[in-house]
Length: 414
Image (cartoon, rainbow, N blue to C red; front, side, top):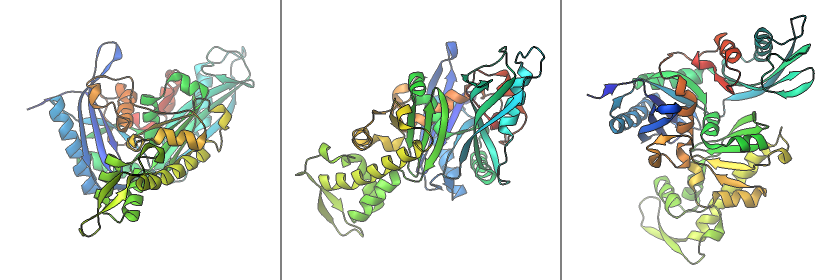
């Protein structure tokens, strides 16, 4: 019987598969990966749960596979949240510094943060995360920690992420149904950013695009702070669907062909090479040029990059995103994605794989593990404190006040 331990566990519940990671904290804060599990499923669509039993079963299979590899039995996990229903916005509010000396205290900081997060949201939504962007003291912006500074006006600038109550409840129901408690719920683009981006990239301005099966999630960073998050309803499944329709082949065969022979840029394949493509209905095979396959995939990739860049630069000028674009997620594994993005957008592009982990890193070094790895990095302090209900409360502000150095604070961690 495997032993029960408070090991760190992350669950990335995507549109096509569930990824589970188990890790233990090593010396000097290291995170050593000791187990992984993957289970395909059809229980979610574009980030929304549409089949609870199917999702529960996939979570069970993924966690059991990870448990067998690690030799431990898990009890709780940090879980990613995503989907087009997630809404985020920036909020900035000002308070007067209370002391006669005009020296800013923790109480002043707390009041400013209280004011910034006390913004109206729909009754069926709740706050998932509040991210500290910066403080402004008497018009001086870019202040990371105003404690002890002198001024009369203190402004707090935060990024607020909200999610439908039903979304978190359904996700919680699925994870609990698989026998796992939830310690934190984290927005997936934030998790991927934690595992993929360097501090320099965040400082210089960068867009992270996590290309999943049903959606692509983006996080825009400027001057070291999160400036914008969004979810685009284009993912790897749409690439597969295009092949299935235009090549007249079943979806499973289209997915297999995409992974084995696909390319997002026609220049990577020979125009003379052909492959045998199964016909829909089991009516034999027919030859298809790899170049034609690449044309289909390239068209969808071009659309994706144009849409995500338009979304990323809606509020942040492109000139302030000097580090360009970083692609991650399973969809980034398609051959030629970075090259196509560079051609379309004319900016530097790289494929990002997880950083900051130790242990069995060779088994989780692909871009498809970015979110699960980032969840471990963010949740390294939450393994011993399970919560069965995600919620937003005053405790969030207490954590922000007492930990100004931490960029973000999940509301569900309290």
